[in-house]
Length: 385
Ligand SMILES: Nc1ncnc2c1ncn2[C@@H]1O[C@H](COP(=O)(O)OP(=O)(O)OP(=O)(O)O)[C@@H](O)[C@H]1O
Ligand SMILES: [Mg+2]
Image 1 (cartoon, rainbow, N blue to C red):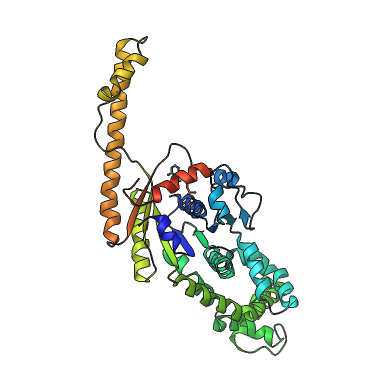
Image 2 (cartoon, helix red, strand yellow):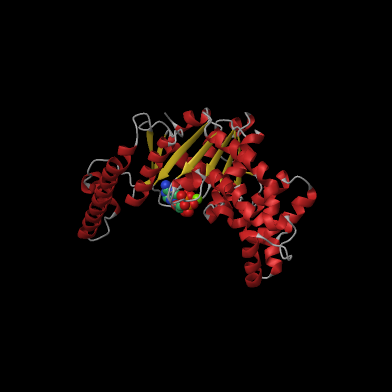
């Protein structure tokens, strides 16, 4: 199966993998490919490399959905069919604010929480929430059906659970039983009154001595307001979990051909399988792909080199060819070693129907649309390129 075949039937594709392997690059390349098939695509990205963000025009737009100009890529036909590429960078604080605006029961509750100092100080970090915010945004854009396909680039999480469990973690954070501890004194309007009873009251008085009354009041208001939002969060959390389980959702594991990265990829493959999450395959990016056989540069380049270097001392040309031969040999060894690692560390975690795509390491960073198209060209049927 090729990635273009695969994405034809999807509404949501999630790229996961360790740091710096090319998740953002792959997500953007797949987005571009889907747009070239006439689909309207959003790539939801996190902290793309600056040069890529710049050349996509993302730096100016922050948290907004931004349409990428595809002029000059020969895609007029696809565009006429509705092919569009959109991208958006996730901004935690902004996403959380938007979420609160949507689910707050009234403008007063909304303003109180948005202005709350503790909310302002912690929203960016709430339950370690970049992954959670990604799922929130997903719920928003996938649910709105504004796009035929959403490709989600994820943060380089060390533990797959962080991402897959994000909705569950927030629910635990908002667990009413936990919040009760903070809420009770506020509810009774007796935070610092004389009739405080029970453990939380005592604890609050103590904390009040340490942190000051104002801080505690802010804290109490904060939890109180979150309690009002709890049902909204829950509903959305359930919808997001449901979305992950739809047949139109798939996960793609992205890795580099290095030991640590392949190890993380193996972990993701196992974890996705254990959770029954659809995972059609793995992209191994940045591979050193040689043309296979050992080359004798003297045989391949000898005549041309002799002609080009006719004004050089004869041994210079021969030395250069020897060095070229040595470099090719090293590259070939690296390529064989990578093959071995992939067999030993990755294949063993894959089942027969999963596909392995390989993208070579290019000389230059992938930082513009033509180079993304080049990356995308390696995601066809393996072996057909
Ligand atoms: N096949 C490739 N050949 C050459 N450079 C590449 C290739 N793939 C990615 N890069 C470059 O490697 C860098 C890291 O890629 P990218 O940002 O896509 O990785 P990432 O997995 O999203 O990283 P992070 O975990 O930091 O988000 C970028 O500068 C990108 O241009
Ligand atoms: Mg990235």
